[in-house]
Image 1 (cartoon, rainbow, N blue to C red):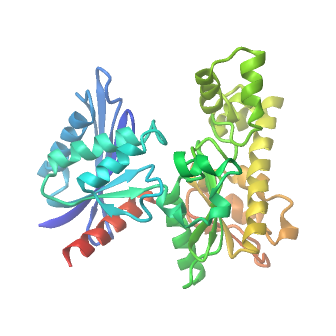
Image 2 (cartoon, rainbow, N blue to C red; image 1 turned 135 degrees about the horizontal axis):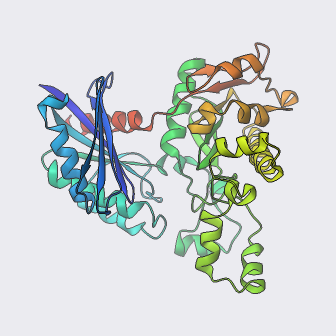
Image 3 (tube, rainbow, N blue to C red; image 1 turned 180 degrees about the horizontal axis):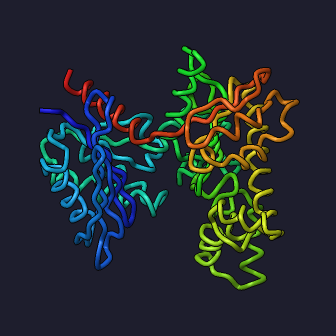
Length: 399
């Protein structure tokens, strides 16, 4: 019977799942349960050339995982195998986890301790783990942390210039996110470029949430997101970097409460806040093409901030093998890549307009033949990396 690894990504109102065979050569099936907690949830499941969408009852993650288990064990739906391990995406591992790890009660307790650092992510991540352990009780479960890749950052990169006691007592520091994506694409870049010692350069994960990472010999040495995913470049609804005094100004001049300001910075800013149109870059570009000044301004700010981070990370690294674009915008945003790379020739980044135009949603080299620094588009595959880590942990524990 085929041995399978189940990968779970549990959010507050959804569970995404992917099933791999243990060779990791084949993705057997994937799907999701959406609208968890609502009166009618939706299960989507695809295997081979077949797919279904059906209504299910999923008041919580336990019921969602029950529905996933039932569909996975249905021999008529293409998964004629047995799950031998479950890999879980966990957003925040703090300073406790430098690598993926076998889940134990102690690990679960530590994940819970970081609820305050990732209140929107770690609680549903842990709910998913607890539910999955009920339905797959006799197999190992592995936690793969978004923050783990960035634990190689040096102190001078992750510490804020605040009283040191705030780090020592409250663990206030830069942690970084999207680590699974940055690790996957930097590893793939090393393969493409033949860099056995590891890739050196800048990885740009651009989507509704965005982050850049400076990678040195395969290790993260700096990243744009910080204590939370709010820091860094402009995002769909997040402001990215701002002057912190703006918070005090809004409290004093508008009488805004901290919760209101947090909502403004997290949900009402970024591309949405500047454009007044949408958080979706495609809709903003359509508005800009029709002459909408604020839409064009939002695009310009977004590209400028990414370009500025690339330049600063090149200075920090002292050079690069390549710049990597990934994520929904990075993989498909032909015009945005052009805007970001425009004028960077003197820094060694020369892009080819025709190659850039032809590369949409697939792996490709968009640099000119004479570009000293390669410009690569690499679709991310976080699920595959989680499956790889799960298999590796499984092999270590069984040896």
